[in-house]
Length: 192
Image (cartoon, rainbow, N blue to C red; front, side, top):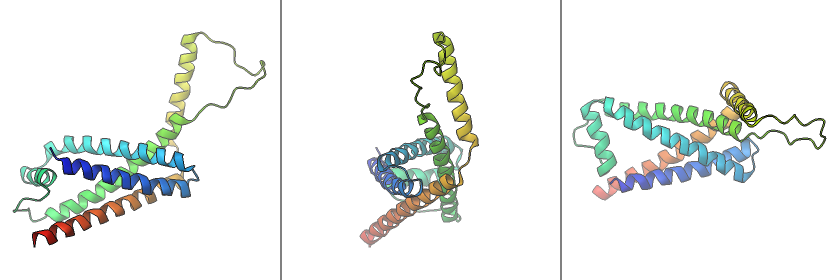
């Protein structure tokens, strides 16, 4: 069991949620609780999609690269012989993961806002209330409204929201990279 990998994933999620919630609170003017909930939701979504993509794509990797990844995940070190372009591959994969996570988080935030968007409160006046519809027609109207909200969320682009998500993603990935670098230095000095 790669217990160490599970612990690091949890630490990375906690760091990302804390940093991104602060950015959402400051840039999107969300209440603190809402910003933490949004950051937790989109980070969990990005982590789940990321791991699913990893398990799908690892079957397509060359055997030498697959061995390196499995060795790193299970034994916390790379194998002795690394391909010539190994570090370039890791760097380019990191850039792709950063932008993929940004797009997943941006779409996740839009979908989350669309799902949580509540209809305006009904008026007290009987004239303004819609007539009672049969149960199946009310369900159809609710389904249509939800579908319309999801369509708007996917097609709508708010530059302020995109900037906030990009900035939040950059902060969290920078902190995670720093943690990984410090861990690498610690492991390197222990081996000496």
